[in-house]
Length: 500
Image (cartoon, rainbow, N blue to C red):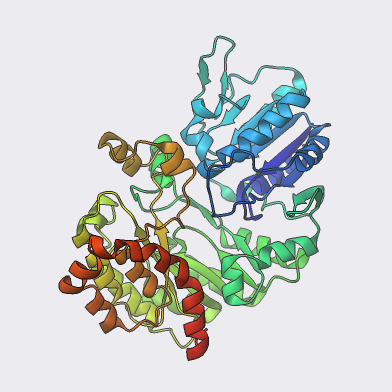
């Protein structure tokens, strides 16, 4: 068997295809990885044809000897997957399987294009598909796999129990063996370690840190049930009990040792678990002990206000953590409840920030996530968030995300029922979190983005009389060009002030 796995994501880390490749290879299945980074990146728009003909020709040549083609996708990359799949099916007699979060949430929609869809975890399911194809047997009764019958109905098989022992799975495939990439040129080329280094160096966090980063995950799942997040939808699929699973410390450290050996240019490790701090304190301390002894590189991770403690921070900073990202999302109690985060109110957020801030001399400024453009917000909610931002201890950075109502989330279902989500194509599939509404209150959050804008001035600009004037319709034409000019303007101001 030979399986070609295709990733359309801008980020070549692509946990899904790398993990599937490693698992299939461990079971004796030959794999080939093809990375087709979306040329639009975060600048999404209506552009169904992402790839030029020459690139598709190269892709088809790489798929010509395949027994199965797999495509991984999230909602924003449906167009990529459709273009890839139509090209394969037009010229090759090879079945195409889609996997990832969007097929998990919308299998019937995906089966309008793909031959098969993997719902949920894919390692065991795709191996079963390979074995069935090799034996000439049907694939319509494999758990986690859905297909469309000849009469047009969907064979919706149940999901199998979650894999509990994540250590039984091999680490992601970074071997560079039969890996290929479209690097923006005319053709698909081999993905060599040097090309990997260049791609990883382009990452936002790598640019901030001035180092090439290696991204990993030590868990699957999340302890929280935020209504805007697809994790909640997947929990509903499997049942919340046991959904959050961790790899052992030894398994993670062994992966990192292998990655550093293969790619000696790695300058830091990015642990991208949704809530790394949710691990028990004893496990974090053991991780820190082994990481310090066996890896020794700077690292970054994510936390939540409910899980950050002084004891965990102390262990992690001592082991080399230099940067931390934490979700704040809103300063409004009403919106926090809407998001399912009422247990992480402003007092708890500020307490976590105080703990983080106590390490400011040993870390880079932390990054706090803020969600903008929630359709249920009223001006008072948004003002609460801006005023809350003015209370954040410096230094810090903000990551500003325009809300995307992804399929399967509770918030998307609510918005659709209330008539606030009427055009999924425009409002979801072709929307990026960077597409912030250019109005006065969002401009205030933009002013605070780098954390050095004077807090008292920010609070004054968010006061009732000022908002009544600058937030009025009279000034609304000002804010779109202000957004467009903000990037170059702030870079100039920071250069003048000598700020990073």
